[in-house]
Picture 1 (cartoon, one colour):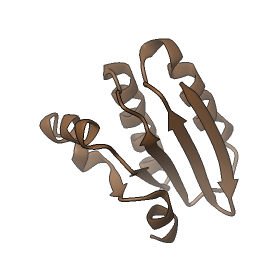
Picture 2 (cartoon, rainbow, N blue to C red):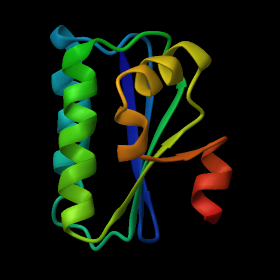
Picture 3 (cartoon, rainbow, N blue to C red):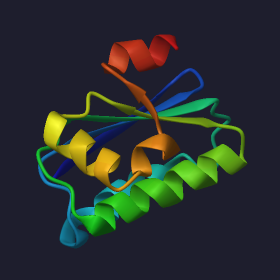
Length: 109
């Protein structure tokens, strides 16, 4: 898994490539931890390069979405492929996240 992250004004952006699983989850967690002390209004997780996410990855996303929502920071999932979106719908987790068709759309919203 490859994780890149940056801050664009008050927007934290995390871009993931590869499979999200228990063994590489620390890389994604590290990116979110680096945002803790930044004055953000929005965090966007770009999943355009992700083909698979296991239950530990979903758990981390739920924890992060809850943490940011409690701080009044919007948490977006951008560019979700159909198989991952199906998992979110079947498990009813889809309602926990703001979703956007693209990273650019999430930045504008």
